[in-house]
Image (cartoon, rainbow, N blue to C red; front, side, top):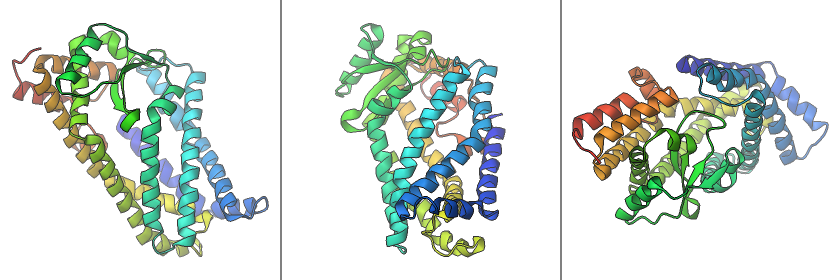
Length: 359
């Protein structure tokens, strides 16, 4: 079901962008907005806002089917439709703000630096991704979940001891109130620099043993000690440069096909998005492959740090059951969709390389 939904959403996105271009609706929207505002950058803001609203309306039925009805069908969600819609609107509002900031900058580069705009756009996108990563733990996450410090107990003692053993200063550990929205369990280290925080979901604390939670956080500690955040940031910058470089190569060549005269014409935005969308699909297997390499290395670190192969296996089995993960996906799906190794591979690695080890 997950894979079919991906391809259906992919087809729907392509059709929406192509129809919006081929019918002349994009140009008609720009002409209509010119009756309200002729300033170039205000026009960009108005166009992006209207286009985003239309895209939201078109995708809403699929979002509801995938994010609400299917989640309830499989017993994963505890949200009411109203609460789910409220979260969707908040995510969409954040996305719109980021899109407005980015596209205003991108169109500045398109209008002022027509031969090197792609470098400026790639740099701006990378900068915004860093800003969002820094503010996410303190600004974005509390908009969706209640956050509280983890109280005293065995879990805290184990995690503090684990981080101290590797000489990593642990500021605090926070708990996310997942249980009023979902049965899924998770843990993460989020943020950059002084905003870096450790988060455990309350569903993880309820369903997993202290030993299993220690293995989960040893995995995250492995990412930290290996500087994987910096590696992923560098990979993100490279990805941005490739994506916008491809857009630079194809954008101007395709403008005349849809009757646009200049790259800075805001009515050509759907064409630019179409090219960037295609570039993202092209790069997705490479990005996921790189991420899986880092995740495998973090798994090995967790197993070596805790010497708890059986606990690692039980933790993975619980995660698979609770999150309804595809334990053994087909190879093509792994390449295309998975930024973590499939759970079957992670379990096999633990059993093969670290069999017989316990906490």
